[in-house]
Amino acid sequence: AKNNVTSFQRKGSRASGTDSGGSRLVSIAGTRPSVRNGQLLVSTGLPALDQLLGGGIAVGTVLLIEEDKYNIYSPLLFKYFLAEGIISRHSLLVASAKEDPANILQELPAPFLDDNCKKEFDEDACNHKTPEPNIEMKIAWRYQLLPKMEAGPVSSSRFGHYYDVSKRIPQELIEASRWHGFFLPEKLSSSLEVEPCSLAHGYLKLLKFIQSIIYEEGFDGSNPQKKQKNILRIGIQNLGSPLWGDDICCTENCSNSHSLTKFLYVLRGLLRTSLSVCVITVPSHLIQNKAVIARVTNLSDTVVGLESFIGSEKETNPLYKDYHGLIHIRQIPRLNNLTCDVSDVKDLGFKLKRKQFTIE
Image (tube, rainbow, N blue to C red; front, side):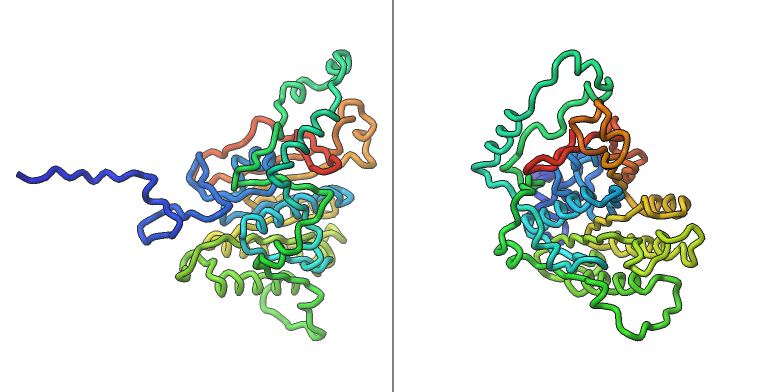
């Protein structure tokens, strides 16, 4: 008699630490699959922001951060993203036209240690005073009914960590990490080459640099190298500013208004076929032409805007007295889905405490 053999296999047995030829899910440190669409996710370095974005940033996508007016809080999100990469042992590519990437890494926040992580949160909870009933009545109902986004640390989790902004990441962690720096002033030659495309020279140099790292380091998904797979975290600072050779922040009728959008179009093509993820900060409040802002938003996968209360009427408004600004979720990607996983609330308050940046 023939043995009845079933073709059933346990789903969990296909995902292993070493990516075998038949497995579709790649197990990489610091990543997890989305419960919605199976897309591989990485953490932004801020668990509360991960929650707002549907679990994290999908590998192969671009997260665009609209900088706050005085560029105080957006660099924090940028550094959280890079610090999470170092803790997760991901490779980094840091690009800037303003600050040397080596100096940026020196300013990354230090992770909370497991033994004192809970203690730090307990101190913040004790220092937070409960508002009186008559003050509570003045708070807008949609904020009053919202749960606290950061109720406590998950120190044992390998996906997403908590960081102390009052301390710097240990030097030995930076030295043990693999990172690549792109500092535009060092890449520009005295004689600029004439290129056949209308890209700004700084954008073209950066695209070539990103492409070379993706292919040479084996992050290209279409031609993988035989080695342990890893994630490339790309961080680009102040893209679109005049320091990059773009004039969209200088005049409404700029001579090369499509340079930034072409850069994003090519960049997304590189990311889609690689194990890489990109976070870009853009001074959108300085861009004169609103049509350019709309195109940049459409060419990004996820868009988050930061609004600071400094110098605005909201700074003295009792409604916002416990916050330093608002975080706006402008756009969430639709990946392998007809709909996107988006929170019911598009904007939440954020506050920079002594040791933490919190979203509530």
